[in-house]
Length: 146
Image (tube, rainbow, N blue to C red; front, side):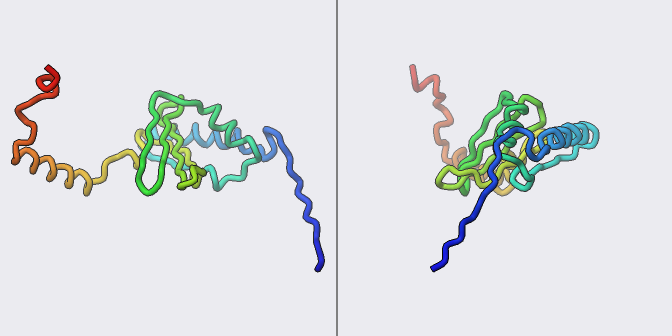
């Protein structure tokens, strides 16, 4: 049996790929495009070569804004508005809580947070049925607690 040794050149540093600044400029241009043309841009962070620590550096620079949402549909997703309005971080996780996808979305509202037409139709039908049956219509939550 022959054993081969494999050598890895692992480097740690902030600017190994030099992609942090260009990516942030791309976000700025995408925000300009959103404002001027109402066009959404999605940047797949996992498709861009980044050195260890660079993705965290990008996320730290973008910061966190006022909105953070979690979605549980076909796995967990986390949607965070950055400190820059219109710039969102959308992360998708597997069952082991490992990140499967991470995107920077430049949009007024990420599509994943928007209600789907089919879901709204089903909700309306369910509400209509509840109203027909008179479920809890005459009793408010204030009256219940009194």
